[in-house]
Length: 545
Ligand SMILES: Cc1cc2nc3c(=O)[nH]c(=O)nc-3n(C[C@H](O)[C@H](O)[C@H](O)COP(=O)(O)OP(=O)(O)OC[C@H]3O[C@@H](n4cnc5c(N)ncnc54)[C@H](O)[C@@H]3O)c2cc1C
Ligand code: FES
Picture (cartoon, rainbow, N blue to C red):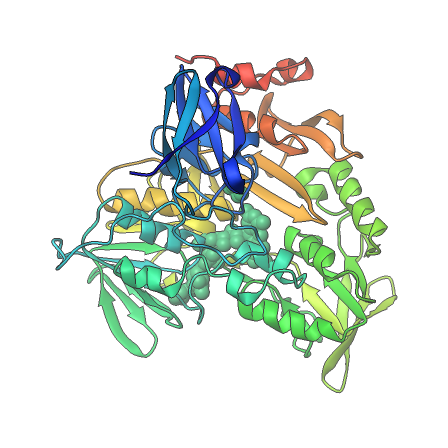
């Protein structure tokens, strides 16, 4: 039995408190909370990127991380929602003689995976590896080793599936954190070792057959087989399709195939971009998408000029609105990034086969030794064309259970799913949504019949400033602001047909936890109520029928 540490006076931990305490002799810190009189003790940092969980919130028996809304069960520390991959370490705790006594291992599993740090996988304990010979003779095949595929594989094991799991990835690398590519990795702050979501040994330990560098080329629904390049077809009992997206490469733009014109989707893309921009003094980014703008914030500096050219009046005009877009543009300009707005590229010009500039419709030419294409993506569904009637944009329609056909599910960027509560068919390109899809699909492959009903959530980070966004909409009638957009301290409520359908915010992490929870329950107040002072904490905690 571990020795007990006398942590604090019991009276100092009030009902509802969530507070980190130091341990004597500079030992590991402990997060304490008191809920309905009972004290709980946890590791203090989120296993995702190490957010201080004392800034999180407890709602409906879950501890929710303030940064990207990973959530952990209060009674066990078990992971209930991504983007964390592991449980939160929970410690034995009791009250005696007016003190709070905790048993903490001398070196508890590290739970500080900062974006720059090498991930310490399995911090809170992974599910036990399936023991001995498989007790289930079924084969579940997952196509795509990205956000959705990786999370689905681990969810299958967490749910106790003891059959064969085959995870197929066209990428040569083991599954990695794509979201870091345009941020810490491109800025040179995160090394390649920090990218993998899991170490290779994890897949062996979990008996997940990970086939990297393996391409699915077709699907035979009748024989339940995935066709693979250069290999015999693979028969499945249940199949998950999660091949993500491929970047748009502007094939009609003259000069698009010059050296130094690069997309940013994979680690190999990011490596090529790092190599191309090392010596480049002038970089042009085509497109003010999240990837384009994050790339600009990572590449500016070191004597490099960065210009973002966009068709929009201000960046993010169509996704966040002009006010927030103007604030981001100013933030970038203060750091030295230039903008060419309402601009159209007519050609990429080259010298000796390498890009030298971007010609604009206005007649201007922007000099560039490297050009980043941040002009959107499309679903990587070419190999599914013969098997399914695909949507116009290449998406694959699924039902609320993420099912596309008998024994076939789809998740992540490719899935056009009915978005709760209205059920509008929607395709969303967010990391956490893809992971949540992976989890829901895995459960349904096991016959659980679970619907995807969460409120979508994403984040972007530029110059260390984070914008978080819950809900989803591609259009709005009005945006209601609380706070000051220019000071990066605000909430923006997107109103469509007299309902708030999405909310963006900066410096309002706690409010966004409550708001995302309310959105997920379809319980956000009306636009009229939002205009008055709202206590998000009491609204989110109010009992609902
Ligand atoms: C640079 C960058 C930064 C981003 N930052 C953020 C962010 O900050 N926040 C956010 O919410 N979202 C972000 N996103 C979006 C997010 O990464 C995606 O929405 C998410 O990865 C989608 O997950 P997925 O599982 O559908 O596909 P992916 O993660 O793209 O994984 C697809 C996998 O399938 C494989 N594959 C494709 N075709 C085949 C085939 N035929 N056979 C076998 N394997 C195949 C691919 O190699 C890949 O491994 C970012 C995206 C990029 C590119
Ligand atoms: S740091 Fe907690 S979810 Fe990202």
